[in-house]
Length: 205
Image (cartoon, rainbow, N blue to C red; front, side, top):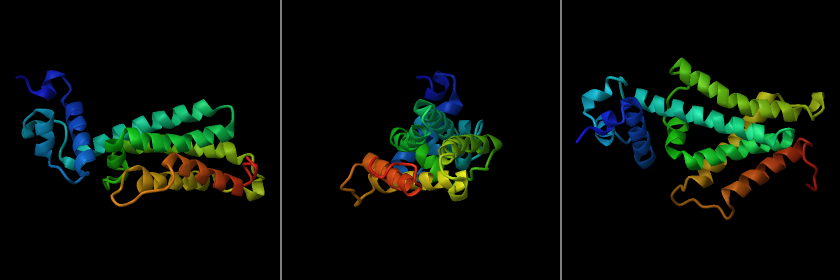
C-alpha cells in the first residue's frame, strides 16, 4: 500500500496535518517527529526533507493557523461594514469561532512557545492578523473625542486579551472549569461593557 504522504503528492502538508492532530490530542510537546511521520504514513527520515525538527513542524502549523485566522478576521471585519461598531464586534467573535473550529492550529499559535518571529513568513502572517483587529479598533476609536481616545493598538489589545481569556478559560473544555454562561455571551457582554466605558455604546443598548 502506498505511503499516505506520497499518495496525495504533498508530504509537507501530510506531515503538518498529522502534527495538528497530535497537537490537538497531546499538546505541542506531547509527540515526536517519528510519531508525526507514522501518522502521515511515511518514514521518520522523510520528515527531514521538509522540516529540520519538531519546532519547525509546529511553526508550519502555526503559520497555516495565522493565515486561516487572518482570513477569518478579515471576513468578519468586512461583514460588519459599513458600521465600525459591528465590524469591531465581529472580529471579536471571529476569534472565538477560530479557536473552536481549529483547535490544533490555535494551540500551535498560542500555546507552543514558538516565536512569532521564527520566520519572516510567520511574522508577516501574525502582523496581518493583528492588523485586522487594529484596523477595526482604529475605525471605531474615531468616534471617541481625540483627547479621550486610547491608542488603537491598546484598544485592540484589550479586546484581544478579553477574547483570549474567554477562549482559554471557558471555550476549551479546561478540566474542572466551567462557566454558568455560554462563552459567546461572556465575550459579547464583556465587549459591550468595555465599549460602554468608552462611550461607544449607549448605556441602554
